[in-house]
Amino acid sequence: MKFLDQQKVFIQSGNGGDGCVAFRREKYVEYGGPDGGDGGRGGDVTVECIANLNTLIDFRYQQHFKAERGHGGMGKMRSGRSGHGKVLLLPVGTQIYDEDQNHLIADLTEEGQTIVLAKGGDGGFGNAHYKSSTNQAPRHASPGFSGEEKWLWLRLKLIADAGLIGLPNAGKSTFLAAVTRARPKIGDYPFTTLHPNLGVGYVDEVELVLADIPGLIEGAHEGAGLGDRFLGHVERCGALLHLVDGTADDPGADYRTIRRELEAYGEGLAAKDEVVILNKCDALNDELLAKQRKSLAEAASLSEDDIACMSGVAGTGVTEVLRRAAKMIRTANAEPAEPAVFTP
Image 1: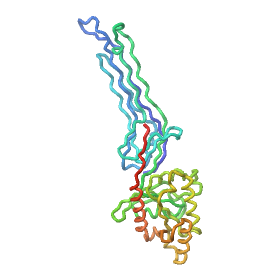
Image 2 (image 1 turned 180 degrees about the vertical axis):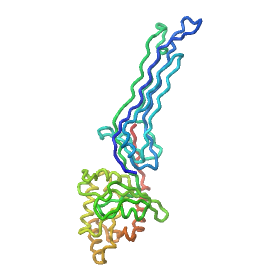
Image 3 (image 1 turned 90 degrees about the horizontal axis):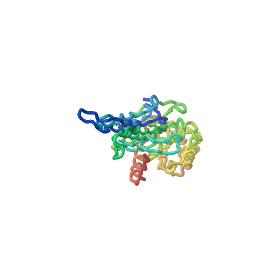
Image 4 (image 1 turned 90 degrees about the vertical axis):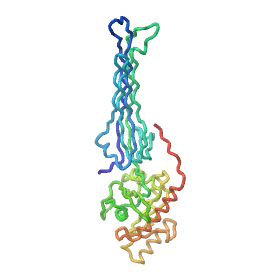
C-alpha cells in the first residue's frame, strides 16, 4: 500500500428538500384545505476515525464527497425522506485544516471519534405550515435550505511510541527491520527511505510502536527535503531514538545538525526525551569507537555511558536501546496530557 500523508478534498452536504403545495381532495369533502408536507433534511458529511489504517492514499483517487439531498414533501401531509449522509474514514492521527491551512478544524487522535464537518440543509415547509385563520388556503411553500460546501486539507501525523530520527543513511530503516517485522527499503545510499514506516517491536513483553521517518537534512524545519512534513510524524511520539552514523567523520556535528532542526521546528520536539545512539559500531575498532563515542557525548552534553552503542546489521545493542526507549515512554505516558480541543 502506498503512503500518502497529505491530501486536499472537497465536501458538500445535502440540500434540504422543497416543501409541497397540495390540497386535500376527497369525495364529499368540498373544502379539504392544504395538506402539503415538509421537505426532508439534507445529509451530513462526517468523518470517523478508524484503526488499522495509516495512509490517506484512498483520497488520492477520490477527492469529492457529496451527501444526498433531502427529498421533497408530498401531499397528505407526508414529509420527504432525509438524505443519506457521507462518512469519510480516516486513520488515527489525522488533522483536518481549512482551505488556507491556517485553522485546525479537528484533530482525530482516538479510534471511533466522529465529527460532523458539514451539516445538511433543513427541509422547506409545505403549504400546510402556512395555514392560518386569515389564510386558509395558502398556495406557496418554502424551498429547502442549501447545504455547506468547502475545501479541506487532510494531514496525517502518525501516532507511535517512539520515533527514529537522524541524518540520511544513519541506519534507521535497518534498525526498524531488526526489531520489528516491518520491511522498509534498505540501501547504502542517502534517502533510501522516501516515506515514513511503522513497525511494532517487543522487549521484555512490552509492545512498542516505532516510526521510521526519512532522513533529515539541514533546513528541514523550513521544508528542505520535505523535512517539515516528516517531522510532523514524530510530534506525538513519547520518545525519540536519535541515530548517529558511527562511521561519519564527526558524529558530534551530525548530532548538532539534527538538534538544531528540532529546535527550529518547535512543537515541543526538542523537549522530548531521546535515546542517543551511536550506530554501525560493528564497523569500528575499539580505539575509533571510543573516539566517536566521546565526540558524540560532548555534543549531546551526556556522559559516555549514556550513549548507546549499537549495530542494526549485527543486532548488537538493539535490546538495550529498546529497553531505554520503553522506560522513557512509560515516563512520558505517566505524565498527564492536556485535553484535546475539537472544533466541529
